[in-house]
Image (tube, rainbow, N blue to C red; front, side):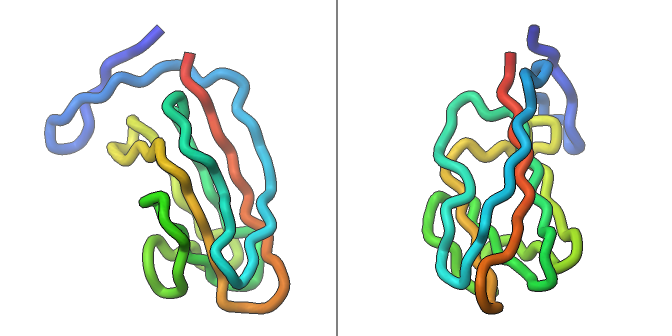
Length: 113
């Protein structure tokens, strides 16, 4: 069942109940790393940096680059995406960090019903 919500600025969006949110951890490297593939049913995304190094997220479906896109600060920086926030992203999402090795990015995804 969809509900219509009014966002800041008067825009409206159709949102539904999330079905079985899925929690995963993506090992982000110092080169562009795939976080989520394109999805036409994605209703909610939470990205949270669970590492000691800043990360950069590309929401445009392209390769992530350092110091471009959305900064997720070390030790818990996060980003929520979805129609309720006026920033639904259905395309591919990538991330990168400037440290060494891999760093943990916590990802929660909810599909609409």
